[in-house]
Length: 336
Image 1 (spheres, rainbow, N blue to C red):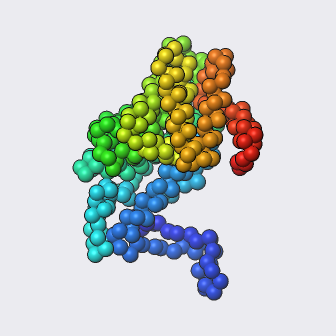
Image 2 (cartoon, rainbow, N blue to C red):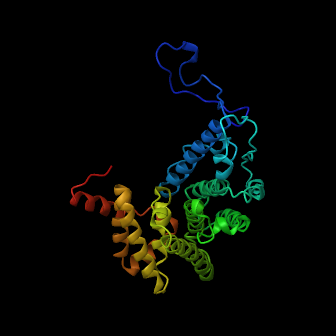
Image 3 (cartoon, rainbow, N blue to C red):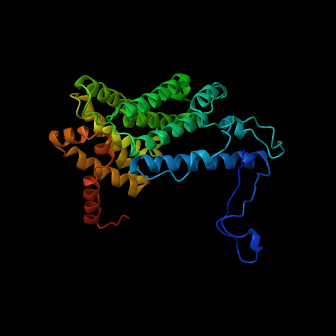
């Protein structure tokens, strides 16, 4: 939509349409009729992009949306969007162009501070999440190889730069405005997830100090998410009832090998969050609640085994999901 090369490829059109306009290969250009309509379309398509990335990293499914075929300007700040009128010229809004170059994207965040544009930061975070998922699920580089470590370091540096580029209103729930708090939670939970995925990895050929250092980075990211849960709950539990961050909240439990009494409270808080999520999203909330119960029953040897397998133990352990299915069946429910 925001590229001269952007086209739509309809799956099929209703009977009666000219044959040359039917099928997959007819390319139809489309533009929003008003500035508001164009902006709404940008937002909807970017949300689809977010959903795609959020489904890919926990499952290993390939991304359905190819980043190289996705060319949409970054939506304007919510305050600007809400001030738009129907009579506004379509070309009057000043959107930041999307680019696949991360350094250029990071440099563009200077335009996201005033007025605060949370969508801008969320887009960069999900670009990084998608690339992190591509890396950890790739069959090319072994997680213990120098090449893999180099790519992890590069992505880690991008996350650090993004965090340093964000004003306090985007990085702290306590500093955020009331209308932005939900997106602040989403953004920071996503960034913490990236850090967990990058550092919770098997490095059998590394020295013990490196292994410990990586795990400590994972623990810091998980504790950051735990702190977000506590801060948000003081305002409104509803901000945590977001299906987009359910998986990001769940992986907090995997730092419980640390000898820290506060971790039990973190896990107890997380269990309560999923209980409340079950009130709104019964299938998702119940699934994670039962999986959490299974993880709490693991003995230290099982936890160490999962840790030694790195992210494959974190993401590819299917035993608990069989447990989830059995429990749901016992409750007389069905789940696909």
